Image (cartoon, rainbow, N blue to C red; front, side, top):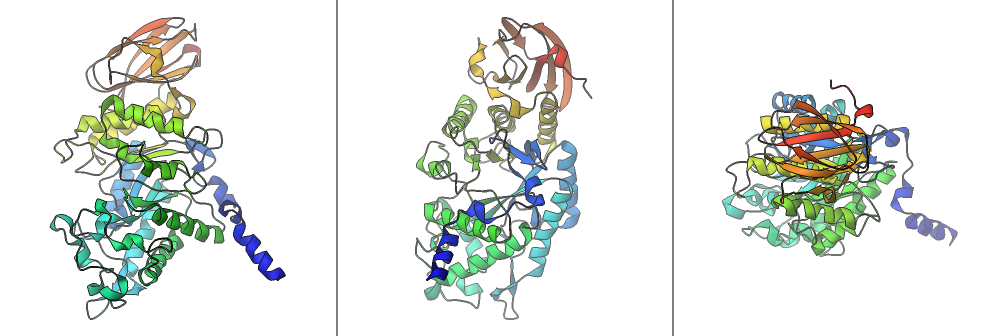
Length: 476
């Protein structure tokens, strides 16, 4: 009887108390205690900025991967997205399971090369202090939509493995619908859904194997899905599962879910917003389907919603590239990146081509420009304050401030606005940054105490760091 009581008591201990903070955990990536809307890493606040030319870089050959990571690091970037995806879009991708002599897969045996590639990514990013936001499941891997036949090739398809049949697994021979329709039984296996133990045990083995590698590193964030339309029970099951696994290893990890809806006020997103005990940060990447002023306003809606329990807000997919199928341009991508930056995003990354800029020259310039701004105005010290702007058209300018101390201003194009500087009577330096080149621009001097007129110094995208002159720093 006593033994049963002890076991029950241990089961009721909250997940975050099961893991003891080791020295490594204290320096690991975690919400910053001074401002939980941002991350801290190695005991310091950190702004995550990134871009990459693919969403599953671990699959890349080493000779291609290392230059990509070095390019990101040299630009001032420090975050990538990594789906655990294995679909053969470029030809060099491989599956995690071992293929047998009969050309079928055994879901109980691993493809060593797959996991070697994954460990290489974790090792090389850790060396460079690059954060990896992992998405465990990607719905596009298990579909035949638009004739891509990804399900036809996948080891989980019963015709391709020795472990179960169509009847035993509940799978169909093909899934032609867009995965957003959520008709794939792969995403209904958990106990509070269809309790499909035949398939679930292999999903668990995959996640356990992944965690065997990731829990050795402190530069990892976890997202359950890529833009999912799955039931709430699916994401919550896996969030609890990986947290429990980590707790057994004495590790505290940070988990979120990425919903498909472009509307950040939807019930889907509330499932993440309303469950801070389960989801340690939020990913609002789908806001990047929205343009202009509404894009800014939607993000600030979420920030206000989370204000009682602040958490980092990541946007790991910034869409926009000339000629892509969504109709979003290069300029849309840069604007979205910078609006989220000033609105208070903890992590901002350019999405991969062809839907995003990836790590092209424009993305590199934008990241370098953001680091220049951060060097003078740390973004975690300011708050969005467009109410201080006047004579402003929609989407003409955006402002974040630490009143009386520092101001961060962004012009998407030629612009001229009035800024209320009545909170300080000091002299101010305006230090311009050319976002399109990533280089410093001119320096201007103004006096506070009233509204001042500020105009962008040229065409294109410009940012300004406005600081009290006596507190100004030399530009390096």
